[in-house]
Amino acid sequence: MTNLNNLLHFSKFGHGPKTLLAFHGIGQDGFRCFQCFEELLGAQYTIYAFDLFFHGQSGAISENIISKEFWTATIHDFLHRHQIIRFDIAGFSIGGRFALATLEAFSGQVDQVFLIAPDGVSEHPLYTLASRFWPTRMIFKKLLQYPEFLFKTSNFLQKVGFISSSLNIFTQKVLDSPEKRHSVYYSWVSFRKLRFDIHGIFRLTKQNKVTIHLFVGKFDKLLKPKHVRKLAQLLPEHQYHELKSGHTKLVAQTGAYIANHF
Image (cartoon, rainbow, N blue to C red; front, side):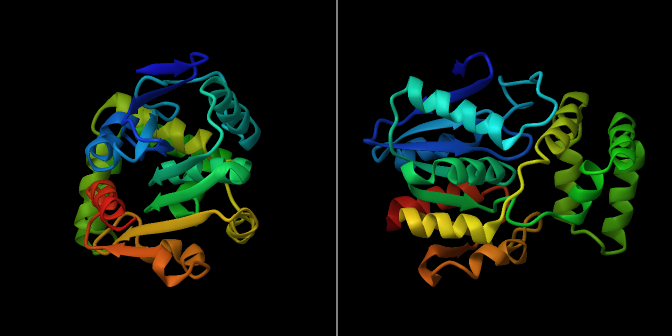
């Protein structure tokens, strides 16, 4: 495990000639999320799997909000230090925001992007409500400090059919300790400025001949295929991949798909 200016930790594995920068999902770290890529893609790629801020060994930072400018400077420093000129990108779930931010800033150096059930293509109304307005941020913070009400509400919403059982289970699992709740709160609040003009990014990829592969899970109840329709409609059919998977196994299934088809 290495760090970048004591800010951004990453795991490095694989020995392939190409470089892959990988960004994990909420409540994970880079190694646990993308370890499966080492066996599947390690001969093809040297993989840098980052711990996002407030996760793993990256932890908290002094920046209240991760701006695009801050992220661009951080990745620019990383690329310079490791003498990386061209690279591919993978982003899963909330890591999709960082994949898109990296693509937007460095599209001239990118060959392929693998977006795996990516956040950032659209924004769930609950995320907007919890992160973008000061009063609701304070309510969200209080709920995470005293999560019993949140868990009871989640159970009720499942019973009345408003949310799926898998979403309820995921919610309770990702919030089952004070450390996890702290990570979720500060991630949601601090990453909120990573928003994207998907049509603008698509134009950048066309100009720079970047290939985007979009992977979704047919049985994913957390980020459903309809949530990335805005991007899916722009891509050629062969760059949109709907796998027979839920949310948690989608990274491994995507790695296997890439290994077998590309």
